[in-house]
Length: 176
Image (cartoon, rainbow, N blue to C red; front, side, top):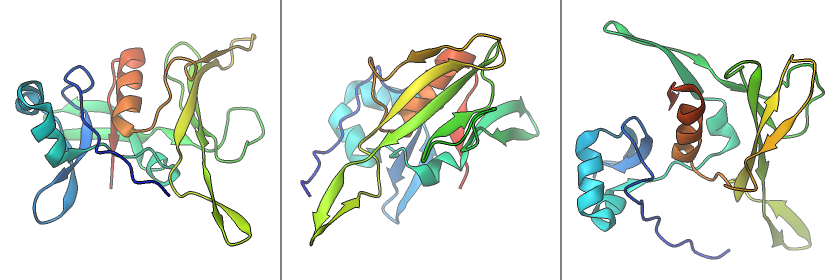
């Protein structure tokens, strides 16, 4: 297996609310980006990228993704956003479906895995190489899919956060 190059964030790639791995010196945790982080990133992307790492989009992570539905002073209410049960269809292995995002539309995400040769067998890697993403109709009487995969292949959680926020004006977060 080849070694991956370090991920260098670009200033236009993150926004306030993006979640990343952060090396605290005592271990790696999840942090939510604020305006000071954006300033640090715009001034020194390389230094920022030394301390922050993207969160890989994995199937285990998809089960912990929540949509923020209430930002009151008393807390942050959320609900589980993705499930492996599609609306009114049979399940396709490893596919994830969002709740309705806007006017009867949902997101459909499908991981694409590489395989490594181990002895005589081909073994699926634990983390997908990337995720295909579609916006699809649901309950509208007509069926359609808009492929986002032709334009962007998702690999990290902050990329999914950006798409979801752009479509809904709502945040996605990871709950541990």
